[in-house]
Length: 218
Length: 218
DNA sequence: ATAGACATACCATCCGGTCGGTCGCCGCGC
DNA sequence: GCGCGGCGACCGACCGGATGGTATGTCTAT
Image 1 (cartoon, helix red, strand yellow):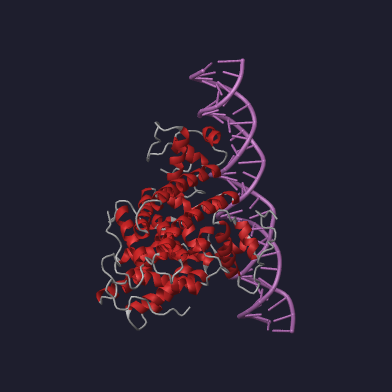
Image 2: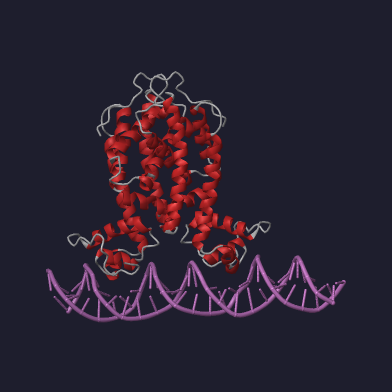
């Protein structure tokens, strides 16, 4: 089954119930994650989606454009979720824990997109790379704000820069796509709980009474 | 200066004092990191190295082979350094700190290679991907062994799996190549100190007397 | 009949890899 | 000490194939 052209994939037939753009998006997400952006030809992509090139170029201006659409989808979702956690009630400590665990959970639930995110950023046009990075930075800032807030109330230690801690954490989250496998020993929620736990433990001041993070709901 | 062909790059002229294979390696490292493996044509590569295609195919069997050589170089160096720290004297806590800080330092010193490492792994042939992953796993195991050792002596908490902590840490280290910029606010050694500090803090048991890691030498 | 939603055939280009050939150097016989 | 042969290092024109993108046609719903 050598399949560089697009003659009917056996794996995961296209979902005919979806609209054409969505079919393309989900086929692209899967194939780009599996083989990488460059190794996936437009022909292969449209065949997997059960449409033709004409259809694809009707909705997307280029292969690049399709990739960018995937980025936008991920960015919007993650930002929306973070905002919900950040704006919730309760101490910074608990909100940070919830947000940190959640981002792991959703990352694991969308592993394909995440894998693409960091592997193929340099395949976007310069403009779009900048746009993506800008949104990503806003996301980090939002997250960091929670840390800063907790710091002002003495909930977190102040001898390590907040953005170093945040960057370290998201580095780890991003790399989930490299090693996490569905069906392994740990569920996404479990990994999220451990990750968030380690993050809070790392940020906890030496003399804190409640050194351990809140109980996990995993 | 549109330069898809290889007509004399202005940036970083090839170092004529190096042997041809080394010139190719260093040009490849730079270009693959800047533009990605696929976007770098063999022609562009050899021009940047100041040699011709014939020379390259004289020393390397394929473009893939050149990429693999870069992987081998990184893997060998990192493993060698880790072994030194692991086999040193002193408590596990201190050795872990030293090794954790060092891997950040060397990663920052070889940002191009690190960037390639995680961005282009899927461009290697299947066999070589497996070989790389295997070596990488050994590296992680070696690192994890230090954590396990400290755990047996009560130096580290036991309620988070060691490999989750280790994987989280290396995820963060790998992602340095995404955001770290030479000439920024922090030196590699400083980031290494912070990172290692956060790692140890996350692993420290609740009731530990010496909650803070050893002093940084950064 | 008009417009959008697709299909199909086609193209210019570029890319990795090859292969016959050149050049300089080194040992060797005389 | 000098011609000679051979050999590894390197050259660069060339090839087959694949790729992203386009141009034009067709079908259907209004």
